Length: 113
Image (cartoon, rainbow, N blue to C red; front, top):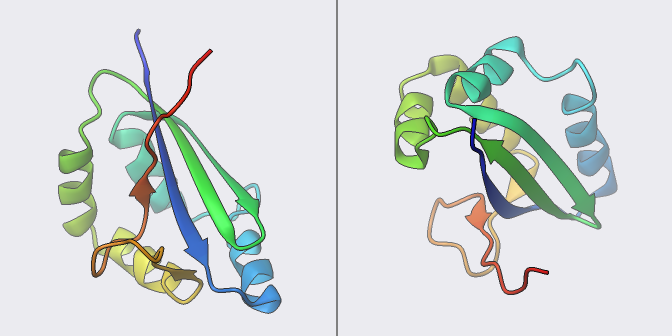
């Protein structure tokens, strides 16, 4: 099976209490099962989120069935995913260069060894 990597960035609100709550939602075993199922059902094989200050980086390894447009459509039609996304907006904020309503921004690769 071949995989592809997608990397994204998003900011959290710069508030230590909110950052701690966000991290708790994402601690091992705390993410809602419907969310992890929707991630796996979309062809995402592995997903990791890293945090520095209030800036996050998400790295996804996806299989050949993954389509970001299809994933967005699946999420838009899943009430539990929408509930989770609305909850996460309490913690997340748009990057300064994001389009209106855009949360995670795909990173541009500028170097590879």
